[in-house]
Image 1: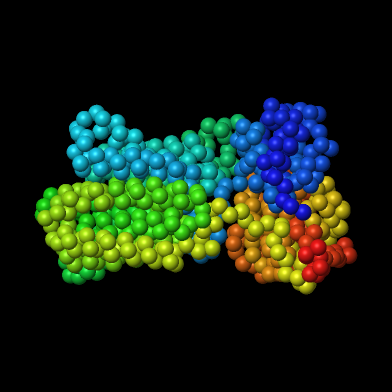
Image 2: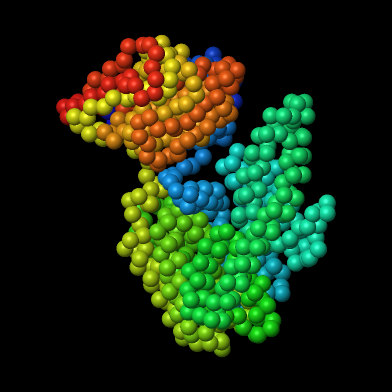
Length: 626
């Protein structure tokens, strides 16, 4: 059976529930649209259940639930657009697989920057052309025209912590407006004015000041702590004062904490890096060039490059030039070259749409944030190849004694600032070699099927199952096994989501019923999808309607993309919290691609323990192709 037209399903469901004027809010869980209707009497259940793509309709917990199955995110996106509303529980984008600590960090940074990428790309082009106009003397930097255009192009970068506070708060489940208040304090004029001051204290505690404008890591760290602090405060405060006291206490704690703790740590790291690089320039220029050229963009990601900027400015004031700045153009332009190669090779229109203007702004103005966070870093390999190109190009530039005579943002248009210091020809050679290394490595090896998935929908319940596979699915939890028909949820009990069983849990330890890959991990921790090595797709749903708990009491132990073996822990749940909140804790396990399989037989109801087979699944070639 062909997949339904998601747009058509969304429009038909909207019509069936009485139109957008009858909707109070919309969200979705792992299998169903969850709507709050102003008048449920206006909804036509029979009409909605007859829609191709709708499996069932359930009314529970004050919600009108339209069961879609694995395609619910696609329908939800179109439904909210058609209804002209913002869902109150949309799943944040999670396109990248998670793995080791580095991959998790890259995925985190990329997802936080994703909502502002197009804005960054747009203003970066303004910045690029403004820089070109300055270099060609088309505009007077002392005039009002320049002041207005510079503000338009630079405001996002100057106030970047405030923008990131919004997206980080969504990621870390913190209050967005409190996060903005914290970020606003970090870039407040009087705080910026203290960035070079010494002897600053807060309640007698020394504060090492630095500039937080354009910074990234400090606000992310602060909002992460904010989210945990808010959840704790909300638990202990009486409800009558909770709404205004929570932001009051959180802001009072987080602003000083960010200034007292994050500032010194960042400053110490930056000073250490700066001292080490300076030592290399004196004793081994080629090594210094490789280090600065290779790691400049890495330092930019962490905001540690600011520790080198004062050294450059001091060199310019005392020597009239700065060797430290020599390798940086190669580092910047190498990342831009890698982005150009991505634009040529990628199959993603969205990624190409960021890569092209981002590369232009990187080459002309030295602004690499759009391509770093939107292209190279999420894809990993292009970023690594850009680092390699920057290291090689920086080494060549440093060997030739390249240096600038005035402080500029490294870019193609700012290269005249490097004339007259060292060998300009060697600098140009270093830049060209660095760009060539990054470009050709990315062109031939940087874009793969695994890292070029922006426009691809995840493989869902129509995945191909290996013919002739036979598998036993083990119980995901200790407890009382019950027939699926006895589960107190119409959609699951009817079997429209697939064949399976329910287990009334005796403890909160949830394990994987199969060996395979986690293909879905709901942010609230209450539901997981796993595809077995044979291609059998299993949904483990912890409790009924527990999505309403918004993660309270649930602790995920796996993430999307993780490989698990049968019996491996995937989550834990506080059963007392679930029952105290009035929800049924039954753990439901269904095979969502049941229609592509052969027989699926459940064990006899009774006591079961984790690891004991409770479902037997078999397939045949005839059934798969029929």
